[in-house]
Length: 578
Ligand SMILES: *[C@@H]1O[C@H](CO)[C@@H](O)[C@H](O)[C@H]1NC(C)=O
Ligand SMILES: *[C@@H]1O[C@H](CO)[C@@H](O)[C@H](O)[C@H]1NC(C)=O
Ligand SMILES: *[C@@H]1O[C@H](CO)[C@@H](O)[C@H](O)[C@H]1NC(C)=O
Image: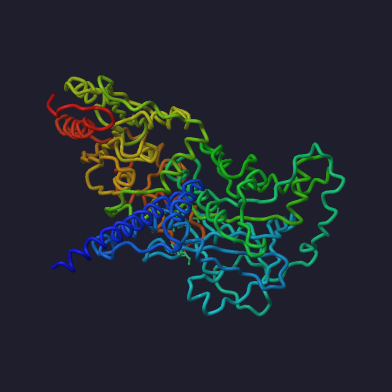
């Protein structure tokens, strides 16, 4: 016994230091999730005083018990592990003798779906004759070890809904010169038989910038090749922008051997980067957001090409095109449809943390300079915002329901907001000041993405028969309360319904219906087929085009539940029946 006690005395300080090391390791890992240079530096300084061994130790094994495994799935989708996963699966596709390079990054976000990819090419030339970017790249055969590591053959790059994604961008806008003798498989239709040698002539670059007038804007060096799903539906547009942003994140955290291990893309290269729009859609209300990562105003490919034919030396654009034709970088980004937020919107997802979503939200708000309101409490009312849909899926008798809500004696201020009538920055401001967001299922609920983490609640009214989990999962990711009821679909005036069905695909579609379209048209190259899209919608049920009716008691019940969920959030402190 004496010996044991003695041992205990000696063990206590040892155990204490072990604990400290564990805690530091844990903190180090936690902070490491966030891409802040400052934060990731301090653990080194702190640890150095304690122990010469800096190799981090693992957490106790019971933290890795099966019960906690679901969080792993969440991390691979919504933490920086998603970006790391892409960084870790990188393949270079050209034989060493090629003048251009092509590198693609892959990830598997879901077991039952093909892998997602994006690519960067260097040494690209825009050729007015073919109207495409050319890469002087002889595709090489991947080594068995590379295939083992999950590097996809070039012809396995995926296409996505509405004709988007790397496969379709390459098909429409890039010619990759193939080594002769390589079998041509389906999916490689864009790869030309043989590239006209004259198109591939690369002038000596040493003297290329000499004599350029200093007033001329330096020509863009990097082109982001973009095909969009639509231009007005907020969910679709934001998923595309989000995925493109993550494309740049991965490029910034991946070393390019051809640059001596420097990143594929340095932050200051954003000034030299330009989005090239390959689709023929309108600009749409989210167009500005494409300058988030490519500071120059997006241009249409047709515009670039028209400049390419114009040899006026005084023309800035012509100078830019000239540079493109010599030695440009092209980036073919992750498709919007590959965004981890698209996964499993029909299934409940148990994820509550999402550093990727937090950073995306703060980048978008930062871009528009949207400030947060001060934390509320005391006598300040809880702000309840009803998404006031004006076309389809309106809430029937909305005014009467809101009037009844106002008479419940809750600590609230109620507002009905027609988001479609506001500028996007103003929509963000409303989302940030909203404590309880109430809406009929639809793209307006996209604003859940921009609500304050852990500081709000969402009420979703779904039409009977629909059981969609998308916004529920997003609310959970942001640690918001989520409360749902179903309501009966009621017919709306015929002319309204007609008007809506004739809209182009992607215009007023919602995340669920689109998923249906995607499934129906998967594998088809021509998925912009309007009649197919509309046909699918009709087949899936008419609820898209109906108003929704809920009886007053149920409406008041669900909103009141959400409001009371807020009673002890922020600085409020109310009894639920006070
Ligand atoms: C990526 O690779 C690094 C180094 O091999 C490894 O430590 C990390 O766990 C990998 N991350 C993912 C998400 O695959
Ligand atoms: C399908 O593609 C063809 C040619 O590729 C095009 O002419 C046609 O307009 C497309 N269909 C739709 C509905 O977009
Ligand atoms: C669109 O799809 C439908 C159904 O598959 C087909 O019958 C029609 O020919 C397609 N139209 C075009 C323009 O591709």
